[in-house]
Figure 1: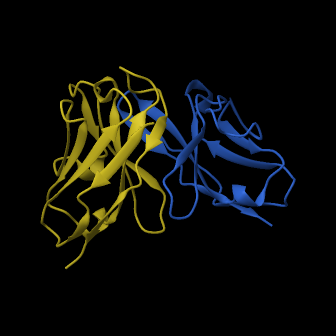
Figure 2: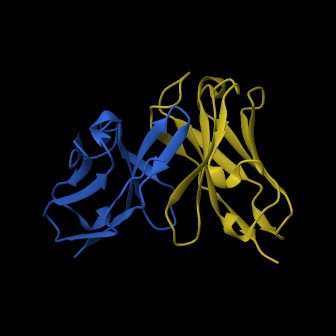
Length: 107
Length: 123
């Protein structure tokens, strides 16, 4: 089965840029979706189809996908961005895979 | 606005059964594939099951195959998860979620999520 690998944690100072990676074999051939989950809340999709941003998600959130790595980039990080982030793909039309999650800490 | 409200969680002994429900509103329920995703305490997200918009296609994560059954009643705008032979490792918050795109599954994101319902399997 397909495996997605994320770093357990990423730390960044306020105002700087955070990059969260999601590794998978030839992941560029798949559409990658990203979710933000704050403590005690349900996940929220922040990027879908590699780089599309749902309405209401700040432009500071962007995504890319190339080779074996997809990346979620958060520019001008704010304290309120602190959360767990998960990437997700479809392994087939009937199998869903989530990455293990990355905890973003704003220093 | 889109709303998904889960119910049916609780404390249950190992080997027993539980049925979760997810009441949907604010969109044409019968047009969207639906999903169950769970999160064990302090752990990451795990997809559990999917059902196509018309109920003709279903799939499950290997760890629940043969024990869990996903279903939907489009006349009641409700999604279900029947969980049998529960194990301690099934303890988690269970979320229902809706696809981004109508009439298809297998490509899109989980656009909307409920608030989750906690299932605790313990003797």
